[in-house]
Image (cartoon, helix red, strand yellow):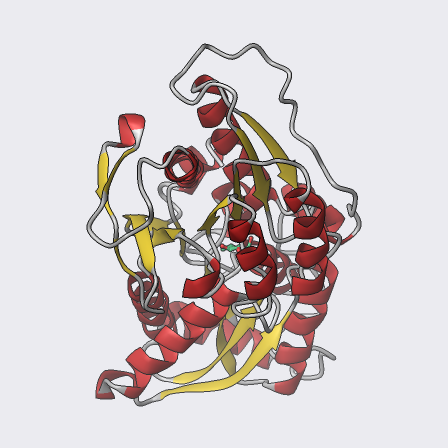
Length: 377
Ligand code: RAM
Protein backbone atom coordinates (compact mmCIF):
# COMPACT_ATOMS: atom_id res chain seq x y z
CA UNK A 1 0.00 0.00 0.00
CA UNK A 2 2.88 2.32 0.76
CA UNK A 3 4.33 1.84 -2.70
CA UNK A 4 0.94 2.40 -4.18
CA UNK A 5 0.51 5.61 -2.22
CA UNK A 6 3.83 6.98 -3.39
CA UNK A 7 3.04 6.24 -6.98
CA UNK A 8 -0.42 7.74 -6.64
CA UNK A 9 1.18 10.87 -5.20
CA UNK A 10 3.67 11.03 -8.03
CA UNK A 11 0.90 10.67 -10.54
CA UNK A 12 -1.27 13.12 -8.65
CA UNK A 13 1.39 15.75 -9.19
CA UNK A 14 0.94 15.23 -12.88
CA UNK A 15 -2.79 15.53 -12.91
CA UNK A 16 -2.65 17.56 -16.09
CA UNK A 17 -1.13 14.67 -17.94
CA UNK A 18 -3.20 13.55 -20.89
CA UNK A 19 -3.04 10.00 -19.58
CA UNK A 20 -4.94 9.71 -16.37
CA UNK A 21 -2.93 7.92 -13.69
CA UNK A 22 0.29 8.06 -15.68
CA UNK A 23 3.26 10.39 -15.96
CA UNK A 24 3.78 12.00 -19.34
CA UNK A 25 7.16 10.55 -20.23
CA UNK A 26 9.00 7.29 -20.01
CA UNK A 27 12.10 8.78 -18.39
CA UNK A 28 12.00 6.46 -15.38
CA UNK A 29 11.92 3.27 -17.40
CA UNK A 30 14.32 0.96 -19.13
CA UNK A 31 13.33 0.85 -22.74
CA UNK A 32 15.89 -1.31 -24.52
CA UNK A 33 14.65 -4.71 -23.43
CA UNK A 34 11.10 -3.40 -23.49
CA UNK A 35 11.22 -2.94 -27.22
CA UNK A 36 12.78 -6.36 -27.69
CA UNK A 37 9.96 -7.82 -25.73
CA UNK A 38 7.23 -6.15 -27.68
CA UNK A 39 8.70 -6.90 -31.08
CA UNK A 40 8.26 -10.61 -30.56
CA UNK A 41 4.56 -10.10 -30.01
CA UNK A 42 4.04 -7.30 -32.50
CA UNK A 43 4.73 -9.66 -35.34
CA UNK A 44 1.87 -11.87 -34.14
CA UNK A 45 -0.81 -10.27 -36.20
CA UNK A 46 1.32 -10.01 -39.30
CA UNK A 47 2.62 -13.53 -39.73
CA UNK A 48 -0.22 -15.25 -41.42
CA UNK A 49 1.22 -18.05 -43.48
CA UNK A 50 0.97 -21.66 -42.48
CA UNK A 51 4.15 -22.59 -40.76
CA UNK A 52 5.42 -26.11 -41.01
CA UNK A 53 7.94 -27.48 -38.56
CA UNK A 54 11.04 -29.14 -39.88
CA UNK A 55 10.08 -32.77 -39.81
CA UNK A 56 12.99 -34.04 -41.86
CA UNK A 57 15.29 -34.79 -38.94
CA UNK A 58 16.28 -38.37 -38.40
CA UNK A 59 14.00 -40.20 -36.04
CA UNK A 60 15.18 -42.61 -33.42
CA UNK A 61 12.87 -45.52 -34.11
CA UNK A 62 10.65 -44.83 -31.12
CA UNK A 63 7.39 -46.51 -30.27
CA UNK A 64 5.24 -44.32 -32.52
CA UNK A 65 7.28 -44.79 -35.72
CA UNK A 66 5.70 -43.10 -38.73
CA UNK A 67 2.91 -41.38 -36.78
CA UNK A 68 1.81 -38.16 -38.48
CA UNK A 69 0.46 -35.38 -36.28
CA UNK A 70 -0.66 -31.79 -36.87
CA UNK A 71 -0.39 -29.23 -34.08
CA UNK A 72 -2.69 -26.23 -34.53
CA UNK A 73 -2.14 -23.04 -32.51
CA UNK A 74 -4.48 -20.07 -32.08
CA UNK A 75 -2.52 -17.67 -34.29
CA UNK A 76 0.91 -17.12 -35.81
CA UNK A 77 3.68 -15.10 -34.24
CA UNK A 78 2.66 -15.75 -30.62
CA UNK A 79 5.79 -16.88 -28.77
CA UNK A 80 3.58 -18.92 -26.42
CA UNK A 81 2.68 -21.36 -29.20
CA UNK A 82 6.17 -21.45 -30.63
CA UNK A 83 7.56 -22.47 -27.25
CA UNK A 84 4.90 -25.13 -26.66
CA UNK A 85 5.35 -26.41 -30.22
CA UNK A 86 9.11 -26.82 -29.83
CA UNK A 87 8.82 -29.42 -27.07
CA UNK A 88 5.76 -31.02 -28.67
CA UNK A 89 7.72 -31.55 -31.90
CA UNK A 90 10.88 -32.84 -30.21
CA UNK A 91 8.86 -35.26 -28.06
CA UNK A 92 7.03 -36.72 -31.06
CA UNK A 93 10.18 -36.91 -33.17
CA UNK A 94 12.02 -38.75 -30.41
CA UNK A 95 9.28 -41.40 -30.60
CA UNK A 96 9.58 -41.74 -34.39
CA UNK A 97 6.68 -39.55 -35.47
CA UNK A 98 6.45 -36.28 -37.39
CA UNK A 99 4.63 -33.03 -36.65
CA UNK A 100 3.37 -30.24 -38.87
CA UNK A 101 2.83 -27.06 -36.86
CA UNK A 102 0.10 -25.00 -38.48
CA UNK A 103 -1.20 -21.56 -37.55
CA UNK A 104 -4.45 -20.01 -38.78
CA UNK A 105 -4.37 -16.60 -40.42
CA UNK A 106 -5.99 -14.99 -37.40
CA UNK A 107 -7.17 -15.98 -33.93
CA UNK A 108 -10.70 -16.90 -35.04
CA UNK A 109 -12.74 -20.07 -35.35
CA UNK A 110 -13.29 -19.46 -39.08
CA UNK A 111 -9.57 -19.32 -39.72
CA UNK A 112 -9.07 -22.55 -37.75
CA UNK A 113 -11.88 -24.24 -39.68
CA UNK A 114 -10.00 -23.43 -42.91
CA UNK A 115 -6.88 -25.00 -41.46
CA UNK A 116 -8.79 -28.09 -40.30
CA UNK A 117 -10.45 -28.48 -43.70
CA UNK A 118 -7.07 -28.65 -45.25
CA UNK A 119 -5.67 -31.08 -42.66
CA UNK A 120 -8.60 -33.52 -42.79
CA UNK A 121 -7.79 -34.45 -46.37
CA UNK A 122 -4.13 -35.12 -45.61
CA UNK A 123 -4.07 -38.40 -43.79
CA UNK A 124 -3.07 -37.27 -40.30
CA UNK A 125 -3.21 -39.76 -37.45
CA UNK A 126 -3.99 -37.00 -34.98
CA UNK A 127 -4.63 -33.28 -34.68
CA UNK A 128 -3.88 -31.45 -31.44
CA UNK A 129 -5.39 -27.97 -31.29
CA UNK A 130 -5.69 -24.88 -29.09
CA UNK A 131 -9.24 -23.67 -29.78
CA UNK A 132 -10.17 -20.14 -30.78
CA UNK A 133 -13.80 -20.84 -29.89
CA UNK A 134 -15.57 -23.30 -27.61
CA UNK A 135 -18.46 -24.39 -29.84
CA UNK A 136 -17.83 -23.14 -33.37
CA UNK A 137 -15.30 -25.84 -34.26
CA UNK A 138 -17.53 -28.74 -33.29
CA UNK A 139 -18.84 -29.74 -36.74
CA UNK A 140 -15.37 -29.64 -38.28
CA UNK A 141 -13.70 -31.52 -35.43
CA UNK A 142 -16.45 -34.15 -35.49
CA UNK A 143 -15.85 -34.52 -39.22
CA UNK A 144 -12.17 -35.08 -38.49
CA UNK A 145 -12.92 -37.72 -35.84
CA UNK A 146 -15.35 -39.47 -38.23
CA UNK A 147 -12.52 -39.54 -40.76
CA UNK A 148 -10.48 -41.51 -38.20
CA UNK A 149 -8.26 -38.67 -36.98
CA UNK A 150 -7.65 -38.61 -33.20
CA UNK A 151 -8.48 -35.18 -31.77
CA UNK A 152 -6.72 -33.84 -28.72
CA UNK A 153 -6.56 -30.27 -27.52
CA UNK A 154 -4.15 -28.30 -25.43
CA UNK A 155 -4.14 -24.85 -23.81
CA UNK A 156 -7.67 -23.87 -24.93
CA UNK A 157 -10.37 -26.52 -25.17
CA UNK A 158 -13.11 -26.89 -27.76
CA UNK A 159 -16.30 -28.26 -26.17
CA UNK A 160 -16.51 -31.81 -24.83
CA UNK A 161 -18.10 -33.23 -28.02
CA UNK A 162 -15.34 -31.76 -30.19
CA UNK A 163 -12.40 -33.55 -28.63
CA UNK A 164 -11.28 -36.80 -27.09
CA UNK A 165 -8.99 -35.26 -24.50
CA UNK A 166 -7.89 -31.84 -23.29
CA UNK A 167 -4.42 -31.23 -21.86
CA UNK A 168 -5.02 -28.49 -19.30
CA UNK A 169 -1.80 -26.70 -18.37
CA UNK A 170 -3.03 -25.91 -14.85
CA UNK A 171 -6.46 -26.39 -13.27
CA UNK A 172 -8.89 -23.71 -14.41
CA UNK A 173 -10.00 -22.86 -10.88
CA UNK A 174 -6.41 -22.87 -9.61
CA UNK A 175 -5.39 -20.35 -12.29
CA UNK A 176 -8.43 -18.17 -11.53
CA UNK A 177 -7.78 -18.30 -7.78
CA UNK A 178 -4.14 -17.29 -8.21
CA UNK A 179 -5.15 -14.32 -10.38
CA UNK A 180 -7.95 -13.15 -8.07
CA UNK A 181 -5.62 -13.33 -5.09
CA UNK A 182 -2.97 -11.37 -6.96
CA UNK A 183 -5.49 -8.65 -7.78
CA UNK A 184 -6.60 -8.63 -4.13
CA UNK A 185 -3.04 -8.41 -2.91
CA UNK A 186 -1.85 -5.73 -5.34
CA UNK A 187 -4.92 -3.50 -4.83
CA UNK A 188 -4.66 -3.94 -1.08
CA UNK A 189 -8.07 -5.61 -1.10
CA UNK A 190 -10.17 -2.81 -2.54
CA UNK A 191 -10.53 -0.65 -5.61
CA UNK A 192 -11.07 -0.79 -9.33
CA UNK A 193 -9.54 -3.40 -11.56
CA UNK A 194 -10.01 -4.48 -15.16
CA UNK A 195 -9.32 -7.54 -17.25
CA UNK A 196 -7.42 -7.30 -20.52
CA UNK A 197 -8.20 -10.56 -22.30
CA UNK A 198 -7.35 -12.07 -25.68
CA UNK A 199 -10.30 -12.56 -28.09
CA UNK A 200 -13.85 -12.49 -26.75
CA UNK A 201 -14.38 -16.07 -27.97
CA UNK A 202 -11.18 -17.63 -26.56
CA UNK A 203 -12.23 -20.74 -24.62
CA UNK A 204 -9.40 -20.70 -22.11
CA UNK A 205 -9.53 -16.98 -21.31
CA UNK A 206 -13.31 -17.16 -20.94
CA UNK A 207 -13.05 -20.17 -18.65
CA UNK A 208 -10.55 -18.35 -16.42
CA UNK A 209 -12.63 -15.16 -16.39
CA UNK A 210 -15.80 -17.05 -15.53
CA UNK A 211 -14.00 -18.87 -12.72
CA UNK A 212 -12.57 -15.58 -11.41
CA UNK A 213 -16.02 -13.99 -11.38
CA UNK A 214 -17.43 -16.96 -9.54
CA UNK A 215 -14.69 -16.88 -6.89
CA UNK A 216 -15.29 -13.18 -6.29
CA UNK A 217 -19.07 -13.53 -6.13
CA UNK A 218 -18.91 -16.34 -3.62
CA UNK A 219 -16.51 -14.86 -1.09
CA UNK A 220 -17.12 -11.63 0.84
CA UNK A 221 -13.38 -11.20 1.15
CA UNK A 222 -13.43 -9.82 -2.39
CA UNK A 223 -16.51 -7.60 -1.92
CA UNK A 224 -14.53 -4.36 -2.20
CA UNK A 225 -12.94 -5.22 -5.54
CA UNK A 226 -14.74 -3.54 -8.42
CA UNK A 227 -14.29 -5.14 -11.83
CA UNK A 228 -14.93 -2.18 -14.12
CA UNK A 229 -14.40 -3.71 -17.57
CA UNK A 230 -13.29 -6.72 -19.56
CA UNK A 231 -11.36 -5.45 -22.59
CA UNK A 232 -10.17 -7.56 -25.53
CA UNK A 233 -6.80 -7.13 -27.21
CA UNK A 234 -7.33 -10.16 -29.48
CA UNK A 235 -3.83 -11.51 -28.73
CA UNK A 236 -2.46 -8.71 -30.94
CA UNK A 237 0.24 -6.51 -29.43
CA UNK A 238 -0.97 -3.21 -30.89
CA UNK A 239 -4.61 -3.80 -30.08
CA UNK A 240 -3.67 -4.83 -26.54
CA UNK A 241 -1.65 -1.63 -26.13
CA UNK A 242 -4.56 0.45 -27.42
CA UNK A 243 -6.95 -1.29 -25.06
CA UNK A 244 -4.61 -0.66 -22.13
CA UNK A 245 -4.43 3.02 -23.00
CA UNK A 246 -8.22 3.20 -23.27
CA UNK A 247 -8.65 1.59 -19.84
CA UNK A 248 -6.21 4.03 -18.25
CA UNK A 249 -7.96 7.01 -19.80
CA UNK A 250 -11.44 5.79 -18.94
CA UNK A 251 -10.74 4.82 -15.33
CA UNK A 252 -8.34 7.28 -13.66
CA UNK A 253 -8.59 5.34 -10.39
CA UNK A 254 -7.86 1.97 -11.94
CA UNK A 255 -5.55 0.08 -9.59
CA UNK A 256 -4.82 -3.18 -11.39
CA UNK A 257 -5.12 -4.70 -14.84
CA UNK A 258 -5.20 -8.48 -14.95
CA UNK A 259 -4.24 -9.85 -18.38
CA UNK A 260 -4.66 -13.64 -18.67
CA UNK A 261 -2.85 -13.67 -22.00
CA UNK A 262 0.87 -13.59 -22.72
CA UNK A 263 0.40 -11.15 -25.60
CA UNK A 264 -1.86 -8.85 -23.60
CA UNK A 265 0.24 -8.78 -20.46
CA UNK A 266 3.46 -8.00 -22.35
CA UNK A 267 1.81 -5.14 -24.25
CA UNK A 268 0.18 -3.73 -21.10
CA UNK A 269 3.40 -4.08 -19.11
CA UNK A 270 5.29 -1.97 -21.61
CA UNK A 271 2.57 0.65 -21.88
CA UNK A 272 2.11 1.07 -18.13
CA UNK A 273 5.83 1.12 -17.45
CA UNK A 274 6.78 3.47 -20.28
CA UNK A 275 4.08 5.89 -19.19
CA UNK A 276 4.86 5.73 -15.49
CA UNK A 277 1.31 4.68 -14.65
CA UNK A 278 0.33 4.01 -11.06
CA UNK A 279 -1.96 1.21 -12.26
CA UNK A 280 -0.21 -2.13 -11.77
CA UNK A 281 -0.44 -5.36 -13.68
CA UNK A 282 -0.68 -9.08 -13.15
CA UNK A 283 -1.90 -12.03 -15.20
CA UNK A 284 -0.39 -14.82 -17.29
CA UNK A 285 2.87 -14.08 -19.07
CA UNK A 286 6.08 -15.49 -20.45
CA UNK A 287 8.99 -14.69 -18.11
CA UNK A 288 11.18 -13.87 -21.14
CA UNK A 289 8.69 -11.21 -22.26
CA UNK A 290 7.99 -9.90 -18.74
CA UNK A 291 11.46 -9.79 -17.20
CA UNK A 292 12.01 -6.09 -17.97
CA UNK A 293 8.72 -5.12 -16.33
CA UNK A 294 8.77 -7.28 -13.22
CA UNK A 295 10.00 -5.74 -9.99
CA UNK A 296 9.12 -4.38 -6.59
CA UNK A 297 9.95 -0.74 -7.28
CA UNK A 298 7.38 1.80 -8.46
CA UNK A 299 9.16 1.99 -11.79
CA UNK A 300 8.08 -1.55 -12.64
CA UNK A 301 4.60 -2.18 -13.93
CA UNK A 302 4.27 -5.78 -12.74
CA UNK A 303 4.94 -6.94 -9.16
CA UNK A 304 4.40 -10.60 -10.07
CA UNK A 305 2.50 -12.80 -12.51
CA UNK A 306 1.83 -16.44 -13.36
CA UNK A 307 2.06 -19.08 -16.05
CA UNK A 308 2.89 -22.79 -15.95
CA UNK A 309 5.56 -25.24 -17.02
CA UNK A 310 5.69 -24.49 -20.76
CA UNK A 311 8.01 -27.36 -21.60
CA UNK A 312 5.78 -29.72 -19.66
CA UNK A 313 2.78 -28.50 -21.62
CA UNK A 314 4.38 -29.37 -24.95
CA UNK A 315 5.66 -32.71 -23.72
CA UNK A 316 2.43 -33.85 -22.04
CA UNK A 317 0.32 -32.75 -25.03
CA UNK A 318 2.58 -34.76 -27.32
CA UNK A 319 2.35 -37.94 -25.22
CA UNK A 320 -1.43 -37.62 -24.86
CA UNK A 321 -1.86 -37.11 -28.59
CA UNK A 322 0.40 -40.04 -29.53
CA UNK A 323 -1.31 -42.39 -27.05
CA UNK A 324 -4.70 -41.36 -28.39
CA UNK A 325 -3.70 -41.89 -32.01
CA UNK A 326 -2.19 -45.29 -31.14
CA UNK A 327 -5.41 -46.35 -29.39
CA UNK A 328 -3.64 -46.77 -26.04
CA UNK A 329 -6.09 -44.35 -24.48
CA UNK A 330 -9.51 -43.22 -25.66
CA UNK A 331 -9.72 -40.15 -23.45
CA UNK A 332 -12.13 -41.80 -21.03
CA UNK A 333 -12.31 -40.85 -17.37
CA UNK A 334 -9.91 -42.82 -15.17
CA UNK A 335 -7.53 -43.98 -17.92
CA UNK A 336 -3.85 -43.48 -17.24
CA UNK A 337 -1.19 -42.06 -19.48
CA UNK A 338 2.52 -42.54 -19.28
CA UNK A 339 4.28 -39.31 -20.27
CA UNK A 340 7.98 -40.16 -20.29
CA UNK A 341 9.99 -38.20 -17.74
CA UNK A 342 6.86 -36.36 -16.59
CA UNK A 343 5.54 -39.62 -15.16
CA UNK A 344 2.02 -41.06 -14.98
CA UNK A 345 -1.16 -39.02 -15.34
CA UNK A 346 -4.77 -39.97 -14.75
CA UNK A 347 -7.55 -38.66 -16.96
CA UNK A 348 -10.03 -36.65 -14.90
CA UNK A 349 -13.30 -34.85 -15.48
CA UNK A 350 -13.05 -31.34 -16.88
CA UNK A 351 -15.34 -28.48 -15.81
CA UNK A 352 -17.21 -28.67 -19.14
CA UNK A 353 -18.17 -32.33 -18.65
CA UNK A 354 -15.46 -33.65 -20.99
CA UNK A 355 -12.18 -35.14 -19.87
CA UNK A 356 -8.78 -33.62 -19.29
CA UNK A 357 -5.28 -34.27 -18.08
CA UNK A 358 -3.99 -31.55 -15.80
CA UNK A 359 -0.27 -30.85 -16.05
CA UNK A 360 0.14 -29.20 -12.65
CA UNK A 361 -0.27 -25.98 -10.73
CA UNK A 362 0.27 -22.45 -11.99
CA UNK A 363 3.80 -21.13 -11.46
CA UNK A 364 4.38 -17.74 -9.87
CA UNK A 365 7.04 -15.46 -11.35
CA UNK A 366 8.46 -12.84 -9.02
CA UNK A 367 11.29 -10.30 -9.14
CA UNK A 368 13.44 -13.02 -7.53
CA UNK A 369 12.90 -15.84 -10.02
CA UNK A 370 11.82 -14.16 -13.25
CA UNK A 371 15.33 -13.94 -14.74
CA UNK A 372 16.06 -17.61 -14.18
CA UNK A 373 12.77 -18.63 -15.84
CA UNK A 374 13.33 -16.10 -18.64
CA UNK A 375 16.20 -18.26 -19.82
CA UNK A 376 13.79 -21.14 -20.30
CA UNK A 377 10.77 -19.45 -21.86
C1 RAM B 1 -1.81 -16.36 -24.98
C2 RAM B 1 -2.81 -17.30 -25.59
C3 RAM B 1 -2.84 -18.65 -24.90
C4 RAM B 1 -2.84 -18.51 -23.39
C5 RAM B 1 -1.69 -17.67 -22.94
C6 RAM B 1 -1.68 -17.48 -21.43
O1 RAM B 1 -0.55 -16.62 -25.49
O2 RAM B 1 -4.07 -16.69 -25.54
O3 RAM B 1 -3.97 -19.36 -25.33
O4 RAM B 1 -2.77 -19.77 -22.78
O5 RAM B 1 -1.79 -16.41 -23.56
